[in-house]
Image 1: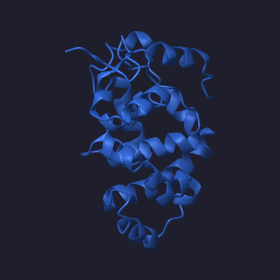
Image 2: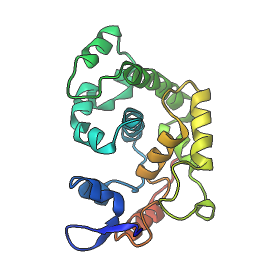
Image 3: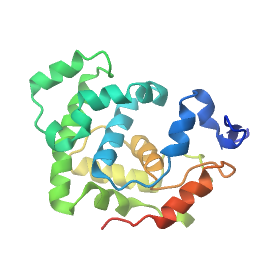
Image 4: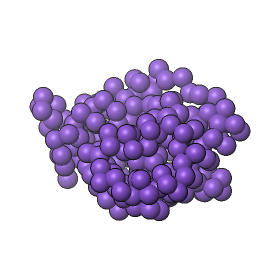
Length: 202
């Protein structure tokens, strides 16, 4: 099967964009471009955990609702959520109302605070797991990797929840820790250039 689909401008994009019109903008502007902002990294990992068992289209459509519900994914604020906040979130029809996933976000916010104290930033920790280009297989042929499995295990050891290898791999794809755009995708070289310019956090 061809790994690309023509975008609105006639240029090839990763085939998964064909699943929904709104995917093209997300794909072109965000997916696969490197991120070192702690809030965005935390948000993405939370949204990937909410996606578990669902489609990304569902989560993307509700992303602004999630941001409003979780105070912009400010993990310092979310870490202070109480059982009353859990009930508030369970009553919010604009998000995915799954108690386990909601409680995982609050737990992970506390773990994020601990990580910042220990590592200086979330970015410094996550980017340590960027795999070598030579170790990667062909684009979009896997749903997990050695790096995502290792990161998943290490996060779980630190007490993070809903961070399985597949969830973590999707996070790594989206946040640019790997360039998993299809070989013929018009955005692949753009993401590659962004990764070349990117200053890895330490």
